[in-house]
Every structure is written in structure tokens, then in C-alpha cells.
Image (cartoon, rainbow, N blue to C red; front, side, top):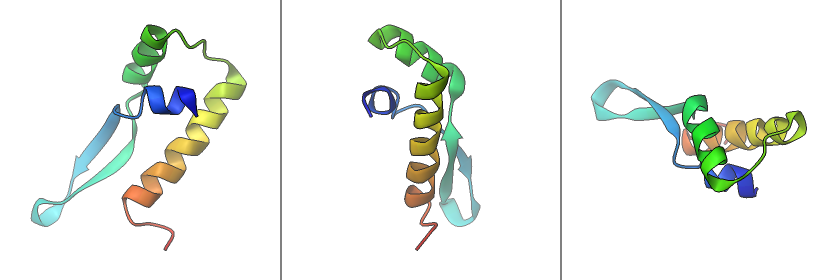
Length: 66
């Protein structure tokens, strides 16, 4: 959770019709930089957890899964 929150501002957005926009996922270059600056070492296990949270947060923010 700490790793995800440390990079939670690093979203990529896709402009939609009628002025709307949707989150497409995290900007992975921004994630790498953010984690390094936060002093968080990325492991394969932590990366899998971050991606799981990314998908859930993206879907919730885009109104999916309701």
C-alpha cells in the first residue's frame, strides 16, 4: 500500500468525448522515479501488488465494475 500511495499521482489519462477523461493506468516511468525518490525498493512481488492496486483503482475511478 505504501508503494502504491507513493506513486498515486502518476496516472496516465485518455481524453474522451464531451470533455470526459479516463485513467488508463500508471505512468511506469513516473512510478520508477517516484519509488526511487521515496526510497522504496521494487521487487517482483511488490510490483505485482502495485499492479493489482492499479487495476482496481483505475476501474473504480472509471466507474467500471459496478
